[in-house]
Amino acid sequence: MSDSAKPSESRRGFLKTTAGALAGAGALAQTAKGVAAGEAIKVGLVGCGGRGTGAAAQAIKADDFSELTAVADVDPERIDRSLEILDKRHPGKVKVEAERRYLGLDAFQKVIDSDVDVVLLATPPGFRPQHLRACIEAGKHVFCEKPVAVDAPGIRSVLKTVKLAQQKQLSLVAGFCWRYHDAIRGIFEKVHDGAIGDLVSYYATYYTSPVKPMPPATDRPEGMSDTEWQIRNWYNFGWLSGDSLIEQAVHSVDKVAWAMRDSPPESCVAVGGRQIPAHGGNIFDHFEVNYLYPGGVRAFVGCRQQAGCHNENSDYILGTRGRAIIGRRLAPHIIGERHWAYEGPKVDMYQQEHDELFRSIRRGEPLNDGERMTTSTLLAIMGRMAAYTGQEITWQQALESEESLVPEHIDWDAAHEVPGLAQPGITRFV
Image 1 (spheres, one colour):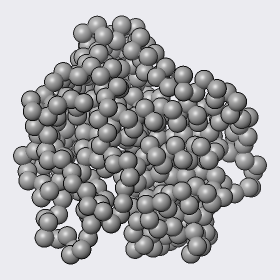
Image 2 (cartoon, one colour):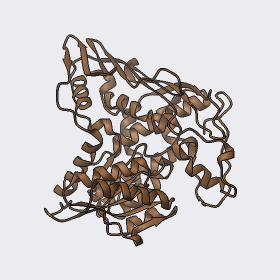
Image 3 (spheres, helix red, strand yellow):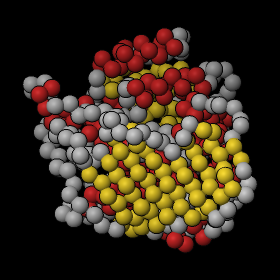
Image 4 (cartoon, helix red, strand yellow):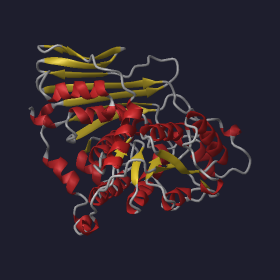
């Protein structure tokens, strides 16, 4: 195993960050208990958009006796549309009475306070640390979409919550779906077993079209507050999405972390910017990040969200005795001294993550993706920091950053001015 693949001192420091705050948490430990066969597992959904609706459909399908009993969103029409879709797909398993269709920024807490067993978190990621903490404190199992935060204070909050989930023996599964893809699991197992020798470099691409283009200001209804306008167009604002590298290309970043056995890099530099006007949003539409790992191993992540350009979502892993390739419309495969290609069954990774989550709940055998989901999210945030400032950023700097993107108090009807686009060399690291 190369030095880059060994747990590092900085990794251990990362995991110790919240140890002091939780020194007495052992008193909170519970004995994990399964759910008896035939007994319902009640599901609550927070965030009824497309991803939330998809997650709910997968959760309902994951267990013969799972049922959706409570939902929350800021838009009543979205709630109605989501429930209509889910009821058609899974008749008899959607049992959300009118009084359990919660509306507003505080609706997440109402879902948690209902008698659900597991909560699905699918709101914009700026809300994730707060929602996740409330779920675990209340003793709920959780599926949370990626990423798990948009800034370092959020990461530090999530780290504490992860430890608390471990103490309470609650399942916490993250939406880093490639970790639940059989073919990708297969190739990383081979890489970790030395099939391509020691890692030399990793190049990941996430080149795609715009995900949620920002509408022009003329589309904003008269009288709509800044907060509502930004939340309804959340992808285009850093405090809600974290930027395109963190919200979307974090899947590629997560695979880099996986290849490196979830040990952090030493530092990174990056470039990025926006070439297509955003009509008031403040996120970049392209990034290129260069991560430096121990032993001189390099990882490169390139992402772009522009129409009419070359699209690609691939991974090229170079080792001393071969290379591993994911994507390019081929099964994951290895070329080198030990040729290999995945030939197993095709499994829906989105369904698989819920199948494993609900099986863990049913059996009382908790799953906890917490440490790796925070590592991967901070790895992406670190890249954004480097691109925004134009500086080399170390892992420790990223973890200890005091820059907080999310307002402490969020008022649906309030004015909320957001910073303009970052300017490398001018924007300062905080």
